[in-house]
Amino acid sequence: MLKQLMKQGLKAVDDFAIAVDCGAVAPNALVNVLFHSLHESQAQLANRDLAPNQHVTVADFRGFVEEMLENDYTVVSPAQIDAGLSPGRRYLTITFDDGYFNNMLALDVLNQFRAPATFFVSTDHVQQNKAFWWDAFSRELTRSGVSPDLQKSEIEQLKMLTPEKIDARLVERFGPAVLKPKGDIDRQFTPRELGQFALNPWVHVGNHTRDHAIFTNCTPAEMVDQITACQNALADLVGYRPVAIAYPNGNSSSVAVDVAVAAELRVGFTVAPRPPPSAAGQRFPHAARAILFPRRAGHPSAMSPVWRPIFSQSCAQDDDAVGMKSRRLRLSPPLLLASRWSLAN
Image (cartoon, rainbow, N blue to C red):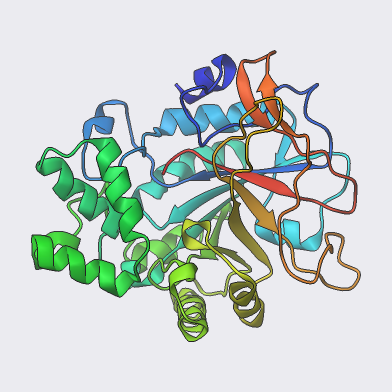
């Protein structure tokens, strides 16, 4: 289904827009596509244990990877990005956020195409077997007959709180069992499973904070705790400290970046807010996700004192050739930048 959508256009999928027209995409492009959950089959999509918009099957994922490789993208890991990428090529990073056990379903595809992917894990959920609050909340709202659109609105309101306050709200409203996963679809890896998963040569694990804290709701001390606790936990769980972080909900700041750098993280993923409509009335896709690079002397991707996204000023337009909205990055070496597109949430 996803491969067909990529060919026909993704007018209905506002968060996922990449250019697959080889003639249209300039070299020196680095694109990141973000996933959350994977389903085994179309039949499994009827399950209501996950929040809305997590509708990607393994077949979709396989078709996506195949399509990108056919269009001359090279799939790279955060460590390769940090080491510096050669100019004149198209690069892709594949990432999964949160740490769902169902991400195991990606392994056959990664092995088949020898493609690396990075899995950003919130470690408290792994260690405590705790459901993600947005899934638990959505599940309870679904039982009450609340529409998916209204669910999204209520979820956005809760994102203004700290994880502790969100958990307390849900427990007060629905009872202590609300944060217990219902099955393999919505649960996280166990510590043992995550350790085994990380042994796959195509799997790279990244920092997604201790309990998926949104940093615009955190004090600097809380940011330090969230990042360093996750780094330490992952060192125990998978045997190494990651080099990459994905800020939950894409919310970051200069303080968050300083904390990440102090924790020896070297590549960060955030969200670039949607720019206003252009004078011609063109719309930019929603919430482009960006890869950010630290500045270090002599580093091929050094660009600024803090990590920040820089996008071409005239890169968003409708691609008439494929009927698809696209965000094109026309970059000059040695700068390697990216937009991060989400297939879910």
